[in-house]
Length: 178
Image (tube, rainbow, N blue to C red; front, side, top):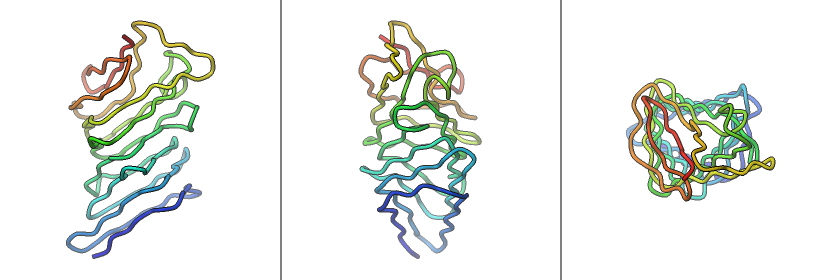
């Protein structure tokens, strides 16, 4: 058994797999993990946590289908101040201290005009906080709707988010501007 901690910024320049074995191994992120487009971080075995103070960002994929994963830290798809789609393969559980940042320059196209999380072959459990940050001169207006997450199973939970109301439509998570 081993406990693995990422405590320094990590940007994937190629795909990376963390394989854990034993009865109770763990992987904890307390820094920034940037998963660029066309890159995949795969974690298998044990448990994995994006801890308070940790941040997962980028437009690539995190394959968490082979571990029990919870994010108690930050998630920001794309780049800070730029929209993108960050894909989670497996169940995405957001803990009570999680904060999801959604950068938005408009409402037309998810992943281009605003951030989106996709959880394929899994579900999304919401908790903690979310923040919508306008960029590129965009000012959200009442009744703007952002489809900020999709999953292969019905999502559950809720977010605390100022000025927006979270809701579900099928397997999608929507935010409607108040």
